[in-house]
Length: 125
Image (cartoon, rainbow, N blue to C red):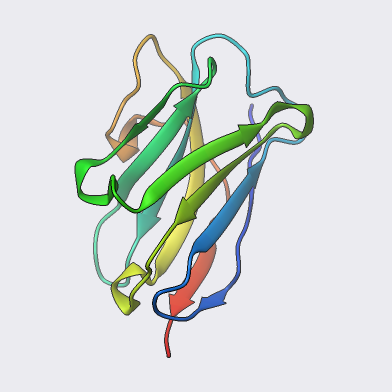
């Protein structure tokens, strides 16, 4: 069982950069073949895979968010973080951290086995 905990700003304003931090208490984000990912669900819509950072530090992003998204990690704290720049109200969503162990980075939300509780982020002026 892998636990993940999200922390986010709750509320943001248009054009700001949103930061979401995911902590893996009691675990390690460098264990081989684990991929650590960020997924979101806007109100009334389906899950959207945003990007991921693998155990070796490599990253991958969904094309539609590539220019605005960055995922980094702090291995000493077992944390990884998502930065989403130039946010608009369309970025309002529940944001989740998730992980799974696979040989390749999977881009389907349903492929991830372990999820955090999620954190709501609302972008509004």
